[in-house]
Amino acid sequence: MARRSPRMRLKSADFPTFGRPTIATKGSAISRAWGLSAYGVPARTARRKLKPIIGTVSDGRVVLKENRIMMVSDEMGDIPAGNTSGLGLYFSDTRFLSAYEFRLNRLQPILLSASVDESYVATFQMVNPVLILDEGKRRIPQQSLSIRRSRFIYGGLHERIGIQNCGSEPVEIECALRIEADFRDMFDVRGYRLQLLGKMRPLEVGSQGLTFTYDGQDGLMRRTEVVVNRAPTTQHEGTLTWRFHLASKETVTLVIDVIPLIGQDEPMLSYLYDDALQALQASYRRWHEQTTRIRTDNAFLDRGLLRRSQMDLRILLEEFDSGLFPMAGIPWFSAPFGRDALITSIQTLMLNPEIARGTLRYLAQQPGHRLDPAREEEPGKILHEVRYGELANLKQIPHTPYYGSVDSTPLFLVCAVEMMDWLNDQDLFVELLPALLNALTWVDRYGDADHDGFVEYAERASGGVRNQGWKDS
Image (cartoon, rainbow, N blue to C red):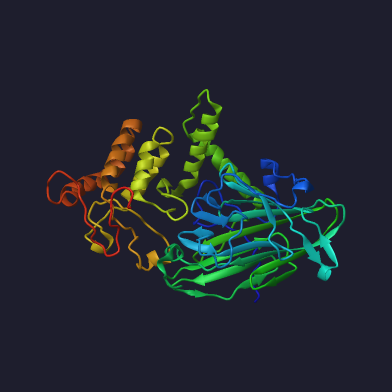
């Protein structure tokens, strides 16, 4: 099917985040900025049993997140087709990539190490297995090829795959990427056994990429744009294949960008890989400049714990019109939760008060207004959880928002008081005052319905949260 070129100009209101999103078609800033240019190959004596070194990667998953986009892959950096463990690329509670598999001559490379550098650049160092060519007449020995995959998230997924021929003879290789997008709602992926609601359009194929499109029943069009820096040799049903001739010591580079888009707006800003990485790095530098600096006489404590904790907190932040808001957790709870965000805000006032400002503003904009047992909504009540996927838009789940929390409203009041103690921000206090007064009214009228001086709760919504205190368990 004919289509527009995916080498597009991308700019979207969906990505107003910590800088300007940009996307990739060329370049390799990672190699310069993070020292990832060396394609080392281990001694051949270790060839038979290569045990991967997994750094800062838990339970076999590698997670990257920036603002509202999150990627969860296996330790190889792949999203296996048909996986049931929730791996994928997510944006606004929707899975925009359900398969993303790299193969070398149809085989999976051998993993040497996987790590997440500075919390936002994931690196996978690999070598080739034995590759059989010409129906067994020729072979490429194991560890002749060094493969390095480096990726980050900024307005989309940006990945650079470098392949170097470390042998003394030229080689012919075939690289393939299998890509699929199922656009399933996060709740469906988590096992709620819900059906695909909308309709998939036919896959659009161009000389430098693919477009997957899904028309949701909620009236929103969702797209996954895949852009590559080299036109593939062949393409078949979402699998892109490149064939290369590599001389001894020669390196070839593939750059892949996967951009999730929602709505009808056409992208407008050129996405460049180097620009995206530089903007992401600048965003993290600003974050460190804006946070309280704590130094001790213990370097391990300073960098190993304090700085790492700041980086982990930065990953959880998303930016709304109201300001910064910390998500509850990755991957399943990468959504606004009132209780979690308020506790985080109170505990980080000394670190960065903008988190508390943004959280209070966000929650003040979405208080309960009416009695709605299905969502446990009551006037003045502060939300428990809100979702943005297709099921939420269709009101098939109560998280629009859902208010089943006994302590989010009292914590809202506590956070506002703590904010005033730290900042004495009179303008913000005046802005929040109507929501604060309504929250106090909720505590007296609905929270303490029996007037015994204690705030209590009872599950009112069918399928709602039974334990509405910390931690919903």
